[in-house]
Image (tube, rainbow, N blue to C red):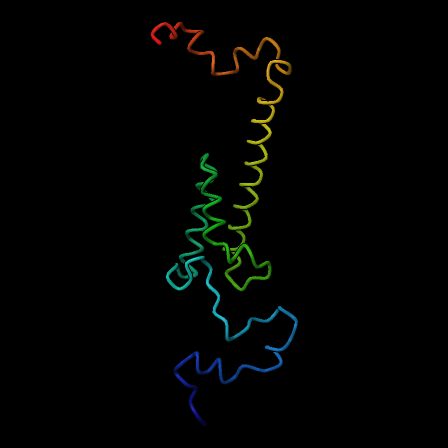
Length: 146
């Protein structure tokens, strides 16, 4: 009996079934294609390091740093882009949850900003003077030095 070749790429190329390459079903991984979990390809992190970084970015996003959720989504864009990815399931879970978290944050922030910019004094009445920050200098008499 012949021993398996030590070169894994040689083994993959020589045993690749032609039906899997010609198949239109995308459920099987193409053995001739290398997928990387990060946008920087082979220079990036290994799969286990990727899971650890994605978990850290996701958790630190809850510490009022939602921009880390965007960094998580952009850095692991290949994982987010492919719904049926071949990566570690925890990695995909953290990246998708980061995308959802940032989307929720962006909707809340946009709603708040639009409420204040569109509604203004008509919406808040007399409480508007206490809510806005542009009249703080006038309120405390700090405009005399300008």
